[in-house]
Length: 330
Image (tube, rainbow, N blue to C red; front, side, top):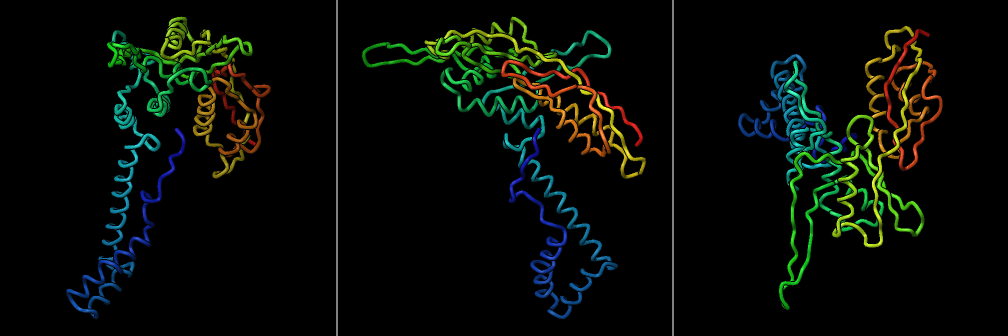
């Protein structure tokens, strides 16, 4: 997930500022009232003396208070989709709109050791949550197609009919969404200008992203519904074209304690970059690989693969088949 921007109201006051505020605003006025100004001043001096036991106790109290504040702030941030980072809290947040995390691959308890279910990622679930309240009423716009494809099955079937001269009924028919697999990404374009022939390209959340026929049928059927589709559009669905690639680099490091390449961090960063770009229109850029490697102390770099930037069209998605980092001494 992206870095959370913590609002100022939830930031922790610096240690020295909090310590002095406690002494000046709370301790000294209380001590002056109880034992007089002279003794209060002596006690205050002791609180500022590093070797005094009272000073050590105060330091521990301030550190404890800071940590408790951080813990409380973390809990507050979990209440909002923009700042939630805890998976269980994200599940709770999206339940406000009756959304649930989808199962990408069911668990298999018939083997040993049992294989846990593969669940929808936090970022995907939060994206669907951010789209849901605004419920684009129809297709027609590119964003409208994307919305309906990625929130497949969430919208009730809406029909309107006149019961009598004075009564019009709008009916919402909800269908079960348990087990529905939704696209990881979707994009739509009109294939021929002004033709109404709209194709939705679908990236599956499973495997390399190739959408199987069942997912394509579900997207096509849903987006053709009379309460979703534009009357002037003829909608078809097709899988994203998957562009396979790999990241292979030779990275040189300086043989000094603080100059060594952070191997684990570099591998994780390159894998995360590949995952983030596994989307329609994604890119695997050699300059970005170079930047990531240098962020993890690479002195110089040779990018073996990809041989050139992988730049995908709107209907294509790059799929990284593996990351290999060969570390060499400079």
